Length: 265
Image 1 (cartoon, rainbow, N blue to C red):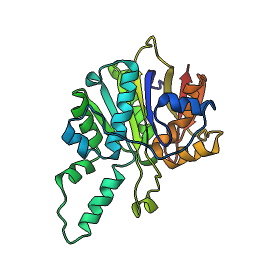
Image 2: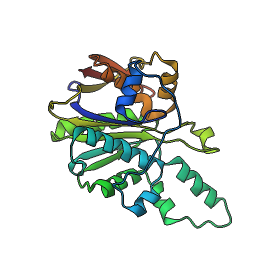
Image 3: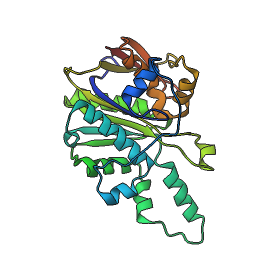
Image 4: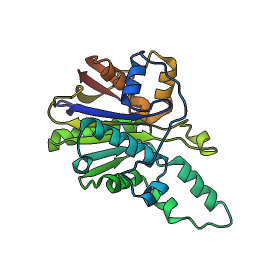
């Protein structure tokens, strides 16, 4: 890319195993706090009406949780934000339950199960929760989904000159699906990107493709998390942001290419 897409980071939302929010994750990445990888806690936000709150599956709770963290931290109204939702798959538990139903004598699938099975379910619930009517893109690029989502969000900011909220998230699959897709838990990160620097911006990103090897994390447990969950491929970049370390971070993306992210604090 001769002119790589770039944007400023306004705020971050994050939820993962033993990671309740971005400040908690930043402290762990900086070595200021110990990481206890307890099961990811997911709650449907109060912004959803009661009926939708009851029906929300894990990826919906995760996506809305990280998105609302980011918009709350920035003090912005989410209803007017363009969004990019990026995930390597849908809700594994919901998929498992649909498969169980199809394998049973009663093959009647509930409408709730069906509408939660589509890949853009989280984007739909986001619209219900926030009243958002701006453009929304929903992507899937298997293990490269974070990189694909970041490139899309950066391109939108650069072309439209408007803020864009990236939400990258993945949730676990139960057995026997876990044998084919061994994602152990839920992890998601949201980046609110803007075309210009704001008073509380936490750095600037520009991304391009590279054949250099992906960066790893010094902490072996955190690096195992990076490898295990596609959305957690973002962790080396998040570590640079947490430490205000200007420089290039190389992230896993495709089999034949990685993503070089130039970060300026």
